[in-house]
Length: 332
Image (cartoon, rainbow, N blue to C red; front, side):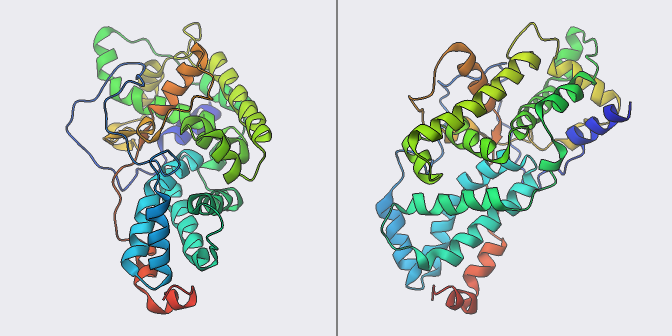
């Protein structure tokens, strides 16, 4: 019973994202989203539409002391960095902290950029190294491995639902699904998790991914394959969305958790009205195996909400406005 209650706390009592942007648009309630979505794609700085020319222009202006250029440069990359961090850290507030830590590291090292490689390769190598080397966040400490995750899921009863209750618990079931899928990713090791998020969930080209992670392409693909295999095996064994023979059902467990006071509308931090999904950051990677199982797990993971609106008042802005700090970082 104690483990049952602890699992409720893990799933339900994490902080609500203070940057939630609610909207009144009708949302797609299909069980599986499709890649044919007509939502506008968000600029993916690791995709084909990235402009090296624009970034280098902003870097040069920043190095000459332009606060406006530095602010624009940070603004270009912050959304993508945050959304990778969110999937990496689980907890949105942890992701905000991790994003700021990584961007501060980029600012402090900007004067060291030698213009000998693509700027985005240099930038994201710093960012992802910061993710991997940072102190473990509390969201990470909630998860251990797939075996323990499976036991926790099994401990939550699949309550009976009539047709009326199916509709009643639809939104809470969606929140639980997002948390559960995100929790599964958290059961990978840090390196596996980041490789999987970048290379699989966000669909970064393998050549670029290998370069950023400083790996040979073959080694990058091997590591990505192992991470994918571990996650898909677990999803096939436990997730009712992946395999209908599995008894786990989001809505039934959502009802159980709601009845026990652990899942309410006010406790959501994934299903909080974001207009964007992870899929909106993705440019299709033809190297990803497109069999039925792979496609299904990608559809589920890319349906997880992504943040698309960012407050401008952060510690990053404080740094940009501080002339003494910019002098110290040789940016003034």
